[in-house]
Image (cartoon, rainbow, N blue to C red; front, side, top):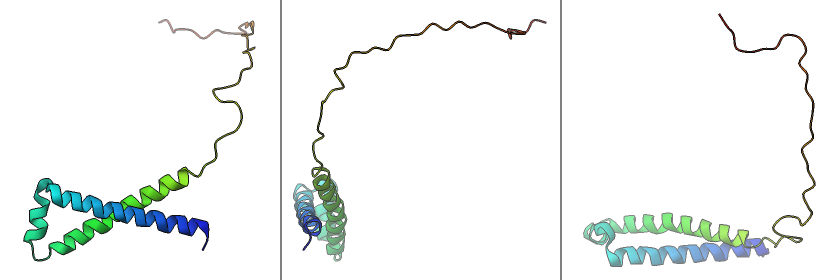
Length: 107
């Protein structure tokens, strides 16, 4: 199995495990009376399954995104800008106007 597929599957598993823990904590703490709503309804298991799946998709994608971003290599070379001195100096340019000079209009 390719490494990227293996990485994806493991991070999806972590994401859905986090989703199960998150749903269990929501039901345990009873945020907004959600435990009463889920356990008090005859089809509350559908709501719990939907919450598990939707949060699982979110947590899995975040887990995979973090894993991919951590794969980046550290940049080589100097950090914090170059150590070269700044040699840029302003250059004086003389400007002469030819013809009519535009200015404020007077009545």
